[in-house]
Image 1 (tube, rainbow, N blue to C red):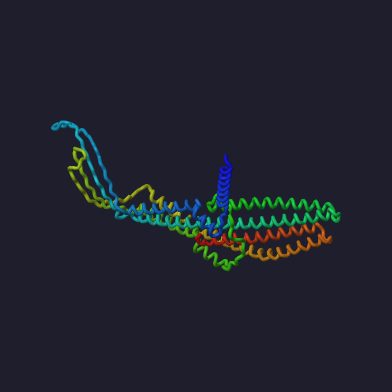
Image 2: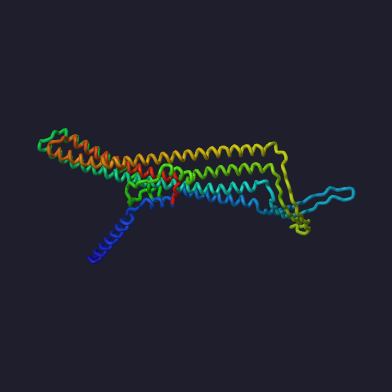
Length: 431
């Protein structure tokens, strides 16, 4: 191989390698997500929502089928028959064929409310399915919001543990330096080493918690589980101004589950109407036309009829009465369930609201504690370096600082997730 060919191949390999590296870099670029972005992805990709949409489509076709019951039905019947007549004193026996075609048209005129009840029930079923879809979307929004805030919480806790390791590493260097010149006891060195090792273990756990939180958020948004994400927001405090009574009123007015129980009561009432229709007569308008012949296909002879057919069941061994009692019992159950659901919703709103207010108070106190703990840690570090303070004072101050930061992050997380739970409990639309 000539030198020129060698350098050409080498240049080609370098260019190719750079292109592959660049492509890998692009593919590995983290996905930036805001909370709204995450919710939009979840609402688009979540399988529970797709299942609820299928339920709604099913209910729509059930309504279409119920409405079709009031329309015209047409039945075509063809009969091919071969028969033998018995001989008589005047006629010999013979074998013959008969081909018959009939068309029957039927329109229901009166069903005692049966068809109307079925249409009403199916219409309510569509409303119920639509509310179920909204309820599912609201739950997915809550799950996504909680997972988003969990990533933010674990990201902040990871930073707290990283800072703790940095502080303890620096402190250990200080202790090592003083131990080397004989100004501190070996117990100070050992306790500092143990404390750093513990902090490193906590950092490992914090990293694992963050990785799991990212995987959970990827899962709920429909992204590959190993997708690296970068969140655009951070945990923050925004004051909530609505009163508890306002929240409860809004929940009772807007919560899909509350509306669903009202729909269920109406469906039960429709079922009572359907059951009672069994005691009423049925009246149908029927028209028919018949063609028959001894030769296939049997279209020679023609007859037609128009009739109004009324049918009234006067005795059915109390079957209709039992169905009415069953429908009444189902209505009673639906009414109790509706009230129970409303009570549960009020309790859910109250729990979320009070938890949010409790977390709000912790935010205020813990934010002050963080500043105090930072100042205390700096003072004890200086005191120890000057030979006035003890190693235990420094370690205790560092632990108190880490705990204060953790409490503050936890309070912010609890506040934001409780507010998200409150919005879900109030039935705030998913989009």
